[in-house]
Length: 268
Length: 347
Image 1 (cartoon, chains in turn cyan, green):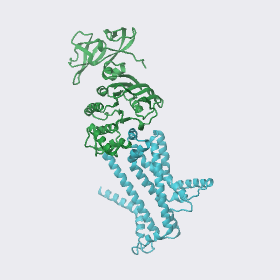
Image 2: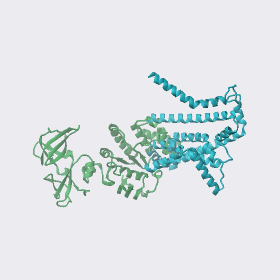
Image 3: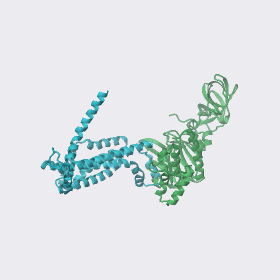
């Protein structure tokens, strides 16, 4: 028994090492004072300060944050509205739309990226909308919406269906009833959907790569370009920052969901 | 008490080819306590939802105070609803739940406070303002739901099986309280229930429904003592229902015997339903209009319930005196306790 337990533990540690060692090495060497990727020569913040002096990195960081914020905000509005629409459908129709909704989530990014690019190129041939920030934003909204829907749907399902009617009954217009009664109830789902969308957007490389055109670059695109040209510890530094940001966001989402579940349990 | 407040005229409701309501005609007077009573699926809740504005009838008209309100949305109607599962707002505390309607109506803050506290006092929940909704028991949530509706001073309060989720003892207390509240605030209550006892206890008027059709409208006494058909008789209290033939006015044959009754206006040899309440039998040790044998005796608290075989039928009889099983007894019924009903066209 004890022996088995021991090997199990060992295996777990091995898996953790495999998964996280590369990231740990990357973080450690982002503080390495020489350009070596193998020998530790001393601690420095040089690469981090170099980042902020690198215009290309700063402008792509700005693009990433802007596109992520906008895409997350717009996708949250659209996704919440869609989820409310789904919840009012008959069971069969709803099931159909939910399945359709899940397709982009499991679809390989490269397919989504290429197909969106083809669409935008076609649009360019008809109108004069060039591939650029706008198409990048549209692409990000597109792949974010399904995750928002998935996050809001369960909250809507758990809702007492008479809550909305009760608000109308007490004199609220349908719009007011939504703001004052439905939205507060589904808020945890909306917030975690928004955070999820923001995380996915910051993180995305493949779809951005195909839809941003040549005029704009997101941070992951810049990192990718940098690894191809010259190897610089700046990459370690920027990747560390990106990793930390996404990790923090994921922790926030998880904590928020956990708290919400606890609250639900208390209510019952 | 005399003014007509709500009128439903030929209201038909069809969902997916299912006829939920079939030409409902109903007049509801101001300040009355009216109960829609019937088994589940009889259309009582749909009728209530039409009055509340949550459903629009497929055809027919709804009038409120003389104005047609078919297409008036719920938030513009002077009615408030107490929902079956309360539908309190979980993110608001008790005070804010009750204040919801007043805040929408932009009532002044100090008036909101007075009125919320007033209605909390009315339902006996003073001091609970700060509580969260999920900290309350079912009965307390029920009271908050009533206070939330009443605080808006609606002309009509709609109640959709409001006591259904409560246990029997609490339900009985709330029945009495609800009636008291209704008399105190003096507004029309329209109450939906499938519990016949609840309907008889509280109502001024009972509307018995079945399969989307109104079976009978009347006072509780009317409904109980003079059911218009076998469905009403069976649904309201327990009944013995048996086929019979009218020989002439005030003369009916059933169970192979002739009985004197008080009903007139039937055709000679017309097939009818005869209804006799279990408590209306007179049990004697011998003699009587029918003679029978006691098959079973069950103690029910106030009375004994006996199944008595007589003249080829099994009769349910309630009596405060029990007879031993197997005893020979006589059964008699007074003429005015024999209720004759036109036979429903068999389906």
